[in-house]
Image (cartoon, rainbow, N blue to C red; front, side, top):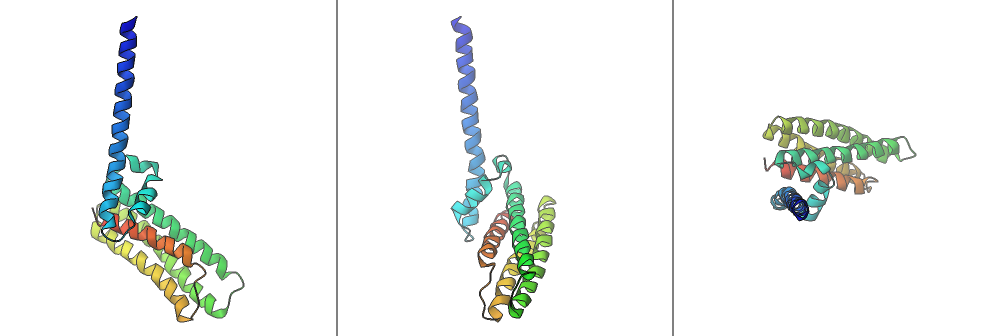
Length: 177
């Protein structure tokens, strides 16, 4: 009777050992990638938290992490665009309406560009992906500048900053490919 229990105990220990170390290895890729991304100015903790929120990051390599980050940036851009569209249909000044129109256009283009970047990352066309991701960063500043031209503060400043952070992360990771 002791023999089957011993085998069961060994099996359980091996199972736990394997799962603990494979889990550490999975998060190790995320942390290593984020260490490299941090050299470009991306916040390390933000990077790790963002990537670890997605369950696919546990088994992803750098390419997969670039896709995850770019998909998150795309979601953020869609959120800004949706907010801008709602504000455009609200009671805003003429100047804010002009600035919001600029934001609507550039964030709409940004969503399309980020979808294109994902396609380029998947096809391993790093330079094209970087071009599209860099364009997304420009889209954020173009929106912010539109309000600055009228001396107004952007009503989407906080979520624009989030979009900038996520697209910067996507660009930093894609640059590692």
